[in-house]
Length: 274
Length: 291
Image (tube, rainbow over all chains, first blue to last red; front, side, top):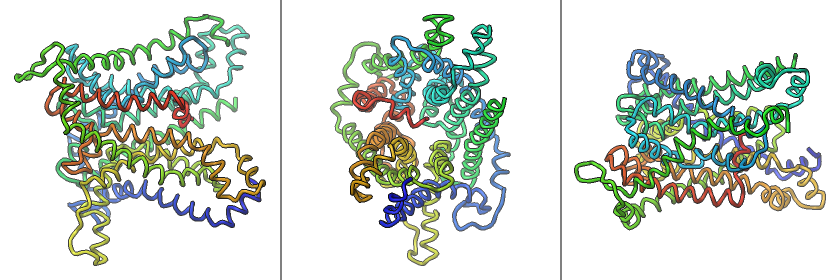
């Protein structure tokens, strides 16, 4: 950063203004979420400001609410299965995209991203009606297929970005020392890819765990995920229980990736240290 | 090419891509073609589908002013939200790109954070702020500015607000990525040649950041036009958007042929927009924000 430019920047006073606007925009993004998390601890029955104290009673209420616990289990199961399948497909595809040149690569890239270029509602309707036509009823399986297809492009984008950074010399060294391609993959490539794989899994897990747009179309009657459960509860009115549920969800979907990032960093550091 | 290519010349990429491409073909491409066929079928009075080639759904969707009005309203809401996002998003993106603040990566993390928080929670959180017993009313009542809580929720403005809140991180991230890619020596050069800071921004930085602004705007507009959750949670009875009609037809009325035709209208319009964009600007700009 040049001294001259910094000087001008400070002299115009514009920077102060830019910083103020930035703080306000950040406040706009986070204030409502902070409100949700604060109100979750409000003991009052009507869940509104002002706060009347601090209590965990609404979290306890969640724990004893069968419907909510069921929704939680469904969401966790769905997210975990989605992330395993989607990441497996996505990592294989990303390897092809990053490591090889082949005819039709541009087309392949467009097709891989297609599920996020199409409006999610359209994706949801077409998959639902097609499987109906094949006499496959709405089921957990349909929900899973939908989530896999919807999260796949995100996994491809994230994993590709990480794979580009892995230097190929390591693999070439292994091969020239006599390892076969499969040995090389498991002994060299896969450990190096682990942070990318982890990133893909976490990303697809949170997207699946948070999704509502497609899920409302795909879910069978009587099955709820956490977001659709919140949606159904909102029909009545906002309650402290919804705020508590929202808080738990924010914690799950924010803490899990942060934990993942920390693990990935540690893994990467350990690999470098070798 | 590298190691793997030598071992197994041409088949490896095809094998690696096969599972993903098969899944997308079976679960998206074929179903999308299928709803084209389906949109020409008819739903009879008994609720069964009549197979054939009927233009009635399309005639209804394309000529009934009800659908046209909601489509226009959808584009208006999404358009306003996109413009507000661009206006609100540029400055924070600029700040994060150019700040010398030590914890810049923390500021970036905060931009990513909303992506991890569920859309439905971000949407419903506004009820706590603007509802009759929400934070704003509580403060105004406490200050004595008003006697009765104001009705601020469930109108078009709150739908726009909810959408802006949902879409803003996409905009900031895209603008940030393109600002971050600008060679800093260009603005230095402009200033050493006598430009003021503002002139250097207008002549150099702003034009070079337009691809990011365009990518962010496209994403905001397409995502905004395709939503039905925000109007259901924050809108009033007259604030339906086009995707609400699809939801209504498919989930509530079970009129699948009509729902197919409505989905296709959305796909053609928004897909067309994405196609035009990628034709001229390329998909890479959007993909770049993941790096």
